[in-house]
Figure (cartoon, rainbow, N blue to C red):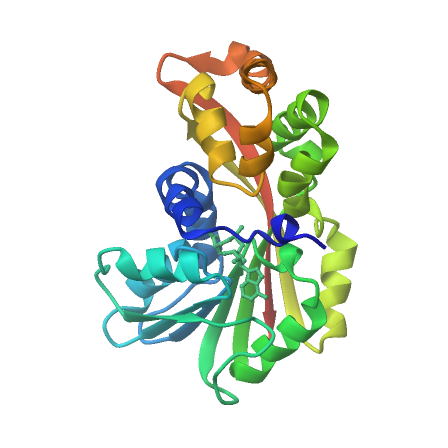
Amino acid sequence: MTASTQWQLAREAAERYEEILVPAILGPAARALVEFARAREGEAVLDVGCGTGAAARDAARAAGQTGRVTGVDVNSGMIEVAGSLPPVEGAAIEWLCRSAYELPFGEESFDLVLCAQTLQFLQERQLALEEMRRVLKTGGRVAASLWCDIRDNPYFHALAEAVTRHIGAETALGLQAAFRLSREETIRALFIGNGYGELRMVVQQLDLELPPLLDFVPRHISATPMAAGFAAASPEERQAVVQEVSEKFALCASEGGVRIPFRTHLIQAVK
Ligand SMILES: C[S@@+](CC[C@H](N)C(=O)[O-])C[C@H]1O[C@@H](n2cnc3c(N)ncnc32)[C@H](O)[C@@H]1O
């Protein structure tokens, strides 16, 4: 597996991720996960694969000053950006650059473990889920989000198709990797097989307002593992990608942007 399919971004790309992707897509998706998990006042929460910390910050607001939140990510650029953002009102957040496969905490340390749009990028999913279960208190919850099939996510689908057509399949892999764990039965089996119980799973549709696509698409790509392949393409190829995606959504576009449905699985299971 290449670095790009495990979503490994340099510091500069992590800054673009926070500036472009979090407000438009990942932030609302993280909020939906934290609401689904019903994070509560006073809870100890761990966010695994926290990126720049969207879910951790929402959890900190919910956990309040009596709670505590820790964000863990293997990518130092993500953790640096997370730590550089202003603190939110609520629980203090600790940011740690560590792998999901070796969580630096004792058993039974957390009430809630969040894993927002990350499990699909992990090669050792069983090991990561085992680690999350180990650090959860008995009766504690793990809550994860995983995008539904790319064909149920029209914007991502259009973008992957356009990048494949005009630039190449290798570059599009940087986006398609986000949909590697999208089948409901596979997800269920993963959690149940790992010894979790009381599985609760829903498909949530987020109707998101993206900025005008002629501007947003190249900015979005620059904040993903597709950035290098896109930058290496010719101006005509890049333009063809942007044009094709914007034209697909022309009918639902207004002056301010375009409203597009995104669909994600939300999963909760109990230790
Ligand atoms: C698509 S991003 C999601 C980030 C964040 N949870 C969000 O919702 O914005 C996937 C994250 O998984 C992290 N990641 C990948 N492999 C990891 C591992 N083995 N341990 C911890 N984090 C990992 C990446 O560095 C990246 O920040």
